[in-house]
Length: 122
View 1: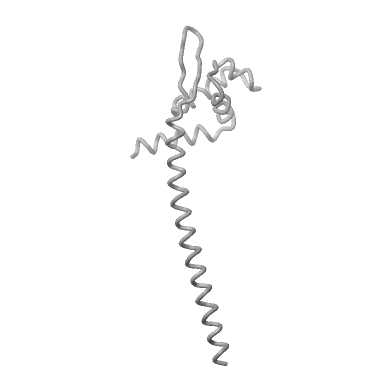
View 2: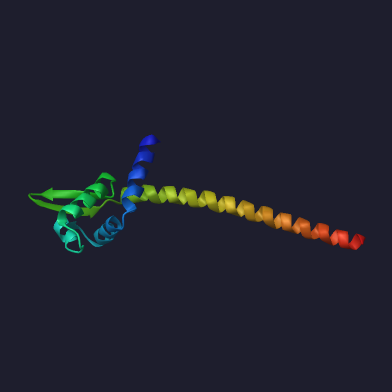
């Protein structure tokens, strides 16, 4: 469980940065070299390399090294783990909010019935 938590923390931390999210969006279309990724951003290639390393450590991408060329591709497993966690949270909160809604409707209905009974007694 701790290992899974640590992994999720790394995934969400990596996704918290807009540059890293933009890198993932580009990689969703096709594999890119680090140089190709850097070409689309107003920051240096070393800065992009640091972002790529964080994404790689979080398991969000894989890097294939052929000679001096580093080609990056998405790894959907890490995103799948994050999506599963969010789905569990969504189901929990939807159920909790449904119970609250039912309680409030029942409470409101009882209040209306009680008020109506008092008026009839007057």
